[in-house]
Image (cartoon, rainbow, N blue to C red; front, side, top):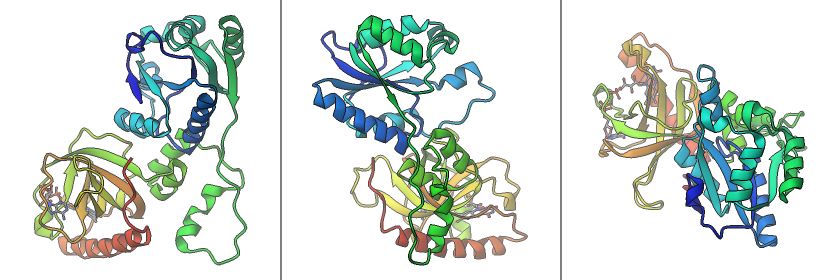
Length: 347
Ligand SMILES: Cc1cc2nc3c(=O)[nH]c(=O)nc-3n(C[C@H](O)[C@H](O)[C@H](O)COP(=O)(O)O)c2cc1C
Ligand SMILES: Nc1ncnc2c1ncn2[C@@H]1O[C@H](COP(=O)(O)OP(=O)(O)O)[C@@H](O)[C@H]1O
C-alpha cells in the first residue's frame, strides 16, 4: 500500500480511483467492512482504492479542549488500513489553513486533480470543506460537475442477538449487550465509551481485535521485583487510548521481534493506574509477564493488547495484601488467556 502525505507524492499517472474520506480512528469493524467492499468494487472496474485520512484528528484542531483521545496512533491506523487491501492512503496534515478550503476546492484539488476519482464513497452524514459547509448534496453536485459518482454507505451495525439454546457462559453474558436489540452502529465513539469504562472485551468485539496501547519500556520505581512481580512500564509517550484504571489480562507484544519469533508475544497481567497503595501520582501502564523473571525489556517498543478487565485498582492497607491479590490476578489472567486459545496474530 502506498502511503502518501502530500499530493506531490501521488504519481502523475495514478488512477482512476475509488476514494473514501474519513478519520478511521480505530479502524473498527464498520470501517473495515466498508473498506474491504470498496477494495473489491475498485478491483472489479480496474480502479485503485484509496482512503484519504487526516492527522491530527480535526477535532483536535478545532476543539483541542474537548477532542476525544485517539483509539489508535497513526502508525497503527496505517497498518490496519493496509490490511484491508487498499492500494493507497493519502494522509493529510489537518490544519486550520487546510480547513479553510471550500468544498469545491478540496474536491477539485485532492479527489479529482490528485487522485482522479471515478467513485467517491461517503457516509450519509458526510461533512467537508470550510465550516463543514459541504454535505452529501454538495458532494453529489460536485460529482456531476467533475465526473465522479457518489456512493453512499449505510450505517453498519452489530448483529442482532442470536437465539440462545444453551446456557451462556459468564463471558458470553458479559458481552450480551454488545449485540443489543438496537444493533448499535459500529463507531469510534462506541469504542471510546467502552474503553473509558474499561470494558476492553466488548471494545474488542467492535474493533474485531484486542485494543492495543503501545509505548517504550522505561524504568519504574524498581519495586516490582521486590514484590515478586517485575513489571514492564510504558514511558509517558504512549499510542492508543488508555482505558480506565484497573487490572487486565492481556498480551505483551514485542514490536521489534518478527511475528512468530520466540517470545514475541507473552501472556501478562496488566495494571493501569497510579499505584495508590504507594501513594503514586503518575498514571502508569505496566505489565507482569506470567512466570518470567529473566526478561530485559528496557528500551523496547511493546504493545499491551487488552483481553479482559479483571478488577478495579485498589488501595491496599499493606504490601502483603497487594501481593496476595496480585497472585490471584495472575491466576485469573492465566485462565482468561488460556481460554482465549493463544495469542492473537499480529497485524
Ligand atoms: C497484576 C497487577 C495488579 C496490580 N494491582 C494494583 C492495585 O490494585 N493497587 C496498586 O496500588 N497497585 C497495583 N499494581 C501496581 C503495583 O503497585 C506496581 O506494579 C508496583 O508498585 C511496582 O511498580 P514499579 O514497576 O514502578 O516498580 C498492580 C500490578 C500488577 C502487575
Ligand atoms: N516477568 C516480567 N514481566 C515484566 N518485566 C520483566 C519481567 N521479568 C523481568 N522483567 C524486566 O524487569 C523490569 C521491571 O522490573 P521492576 O523491578 O518492576 O522495575 P521497574 O519497574 O523499576 O522497571 C522490566 O522493565 C523488564 O525489563
